[in-house]
Amino acid sequence: MDTAMQFNKGDRVEYKGQDDQKHTGEIRGIQGQPPQARYTVRDENTNVEEQVEERKIERQL
Image (cartoon, rainbow, N blue to C red; front, top):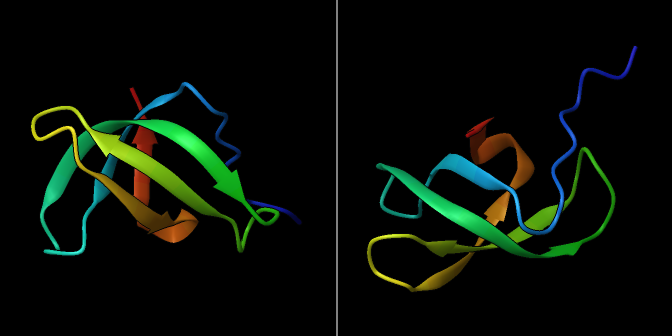
């Protein structure tokens, strides 16, 4: 069974950043295929983009 979540460019998500804290941001790009996809997410508060593994995205907002 495939239980991987699928996220799309433009989705608002809550995720764990590299600092291991919760952040919210918008998916700006996708590399690879779920469940090993990596997402470029722009943090809503800092406007900084970072690469986030799919498993670190907690939910879509």
